[in-house]
Image 1: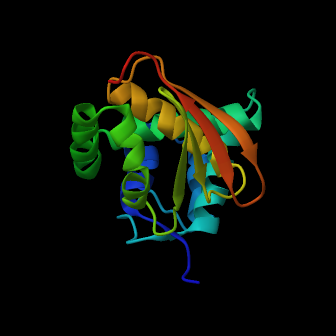
Image 2 (image 1 turned 90 degrees about the horizontal axis):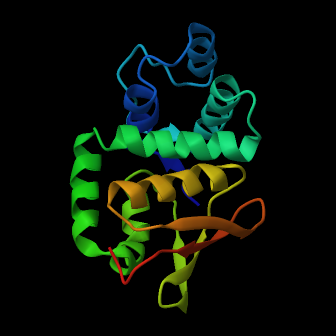
Length: 184
């Protein structure tokens, strides 16, 4: 199995744009020790395990009073807010506005793969406006991706979208995604 990697648009979305000016010096030093030097150009890719450690450090540093699940979800939402300002993010979110919820979910694997080389997706229809989405997302990243999906729906104009962590183990997660209206 190839090394699982996270690509610069995701790192840029969170750390360079989404958290611009909000990363304290002590956290910057911790991130540097994990291989993410915010004072240098981004690398072509980051090992998934390093990415997880960087998100964990950031969640604790920036949201110390929140439960871990909430802190990670908030960072996922912040990443999309910043990702929207990247070239790749602008293009992708612009297309999502045109597609509608069901078609966006059908393209989930492609969308996630703009940010990494490992995501696999399985969709199960549960109703006209409900699907279960399975991801091979390890550990606490399940909550980061929950935030990513919530913020993506908002950015794409999705009405009343809810993303619930339904079941998970250490390597996978299934979300229940529901949305209002016929589509967006």
